[in-house]
Amino acid sequence: MDIDDTLEEQEVEEEEEQEEEIEEQAAGAADDEFTRGLDFILDIPLEVVVELGRSRVVISELLQLTKGSIVELSKLAGEPMDIYVNGKLFARGEVVVVNEKFGVRLTDIVNPIDTMPEVAK
Image (cartoon, rainbow, N blue to C red; front, side):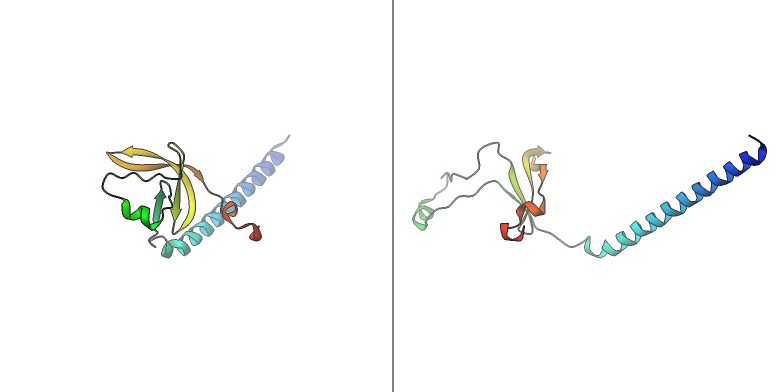
C-alpha cells in the first residue's frame, strides 16, 4: 500500500464521517422541530384518576351507609389498580408510600389497541 492509497482511504473515511454528521444534525433538527411543535400542548392539564376498585349498590343500601360502614370493592387486596388519564385507561400500578403520602408505582402501561372495542379491532 502506498501513500496515495492511504490518502484516498482517509479521504473516503472523512467523507463518510461528514455524511454521518450531517445526517445526525438533520435528525436532531427534525427532533427539535417536532418538540417545538409539541411545546404548546405540554402544559395542557390532564385529570389522572387511580381507581382502587368499584362497587354497585342500590339506593336502599346507600342510604344505610354510616360512618364506619365498609363498602366491598371489586378488586382483591394486592391486585393492580387501574390508572385513568382523562377517563381513558392508561396504566396499572401498585400502591406505594412516598414521604408519608400515597403514590402509585406503574407496573404496566396499557396498549391503546387492547382497550378498543372488538368491532374496531
